[in-house]
Image (cartoon, rainbow, N blue to C red; front, top):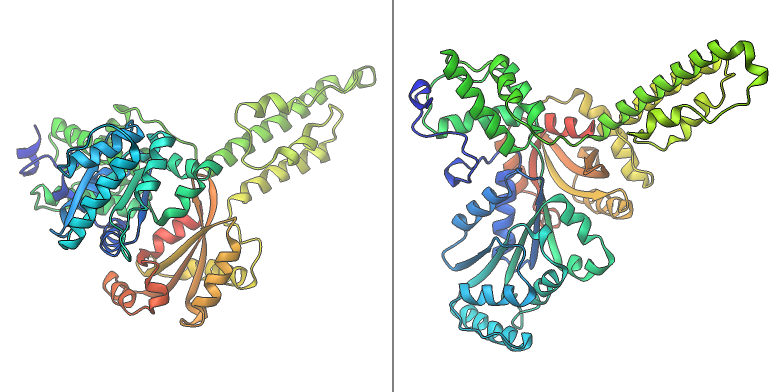
Length: 473
């Protein structure tokens, strides 16, 4: 409808994956390169996780196109396959005539065929979408498939694409064996505002647009907030914004058109940790006011009234603060609290807000030292510079973090190693980065020159602005 109005050859924001519109920014291109490397170098099972609409299917389609001709790809999009059905599905893709029967016979037939293909210089990779919805018995069969190998090489490469709950499921005790088989894990994180601006402009030009940027910065800000950085949502909102601009007879998308698009769209919004802290602090402050008001009304008959339960319990039950509620309990512990106590409680509510500050690692001398130095560095580093991302650990793996930093400091200047905070699904993680580069090209050149000890971790570049944004989550 609006194609001629904006000089477009095709719709720029379709939600169906079109590999011509693959955006390589925001670590998507680096993740693709890492996947290509892992598949062609016998790296076993690889996992890619990301929120609904983060671009997993698009990445999968591009991966299928970019793999060498010697690699046969099997794409399984049905997550409800049973353990026998997934074996038969793989056999069908390989044009094998397998009959339902004993699983061991089917596995043996698959192994013999894979050995023949390997002898011909061919590899086979199975790409499994929606892995988070697979039954446990099917996931166990995938683990057994990963055991198919020759004397020195894996015969079958497996890539699992799933939502964040798949990561949580793999943490279960029953999934320990499968989790140990996963050699590489990649995460498609939501786009930050600058990425969204580049993403929208890229797709407009991929669709044939040749003029100045259509979406102004205020429109980008609205779309970034409403989409929460998920590419599918960005596509939907951008498409509706263009339609609103066309209907208004304008060739520019401002915050007015963007807000119309948001009002016309219903998205599920997941509260971030910061939002929960703010809600909890607001409830706490409301409890203080309620307690003080009740105190003023009932102070005359205070001696005849026994202290009741804390009224703050009702105000915080719907959505408790992100931190344990111990700090909130004494604030309204009785109706006879003094004004000084209320003032103290208000101060405590302000302290709760400061909990959103980046949390340093609880242990590790080198990790804590580099974390403190990184916080200072992030305050003054140019936002358009880049650093090389080397590794990520969760808060339960601080021993590994310290060990990695010790090993890295033997081959790199320790003063250029950075440690910063990242929240993934509300869980505390720490990333290790290296160096500061004025352009992506310089960062890519530096990545190629890293020692083998570090290049084995498949490093990639990330902007200082993005690091700073994640560090504040």
